[in-house]
Length: 70
Image (cartoon, rainbow, N blue to C red):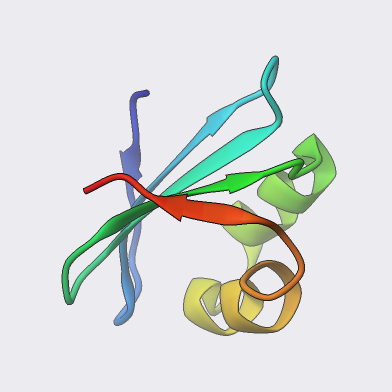
């Protein structure tokens, strides 16, 4: 998956697979995680949020099943 670099103190890059409804997040402190069943609207809101780390922590992190891939 291709990830886009983002301006965030917590997140390094974010990618999204619309067909699989999968969000992929690379963290600045290390680790790449895939979050499942993430709607496109949630991805769009994350990418447009003034604080991507805050949005991720409050709206995505504990609301979706995830797996560490790297």
